[in-house]
Image (tube, rainbow, N blue to C red; front, side):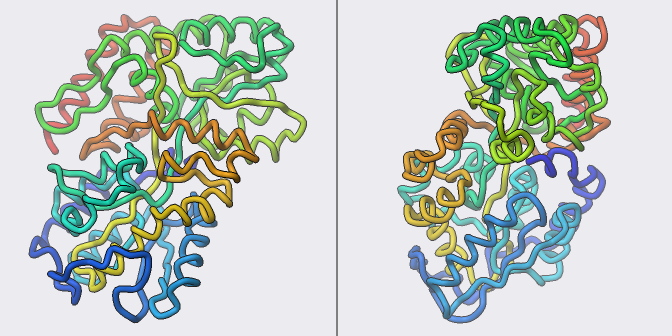
Length: 440
């Protein structure tokens, strides 16, 4: 997740990409499969190489393993996988659709799926996949952005989730129970105070001060868990609604004022976000599933746990779900094979013997209870976030939320580092976000 928190396509480029894509509206597909009842199996619908694009970085090792597993079972229709630089992916997809030079299927950053769905540049798969039982437990965040106007356009390829990581060693030193993480923001504050009181270079909490993506990934869920809505979905929609917005901003402001975060956190732009927890100097931190392995590599002796990110009320929780969808671009010649690849990815066998075996999150919540995760409890703990995960649904995610110059980060920074009236801070951000959405 860390690469996607910061390396997002600039707003102008993303808008231009969809503009290009919008130039080639048309029928669902000119492929040879169109109109046929899909086999909806985990094997070939026809022979010959299947082309697939995926963005670079992130979960390359896992995607490689998934493709390898398909190819081993389907030697007559192997997937030829091409990685596209992350920052070029949206533009390349749009240009390919406009020119008719598209892969048979592709992995798409779920952030951008609604743009392409609205522009009718992805194949509507509703009639082919809506009856699949596997979708009932598929990652809710993924399925939300895979749906547009009640039509389905894809399934999860992989998932990144945010959760609360906590340092059990620091808990013990502060007199806290290492097996009882906080279940509300009030508890989180109380625990942070005790950990910070240990002194030295130890702080109770971590807040990334200059990273829009890091904040939606880790602070956004605190708002969702407190009943708030963040984004403006489209023109006329109201962003930043619910008492949880102000409550969480007050919570974060109080944490900074209490000295519960390191002063250096203020300049964190996402480059070193993923390295913070493993230092052993942070008591609690919202971060991603990637930090299980990374923290162990950094600090092998550190004992830590994983819990859900809490809200104002005890027992409430939420998570940001990131990752990719598998979708089919308009113009694909192999829609049925693409659908069968999706069925393969969601199958019990692949969920357990590829995703879980490699200690990657399963994309189905009912597959969390497996022998590989049982041998690695922290992965099982972080996988619980799939059941409470969310993803902002908007055609202007970058402009509203992920831009370094956008209203979301400006709001967070004013809450953290100024004494500006929070009602005014929220009103200013709300106005800017609405203006962006109204132009979409």
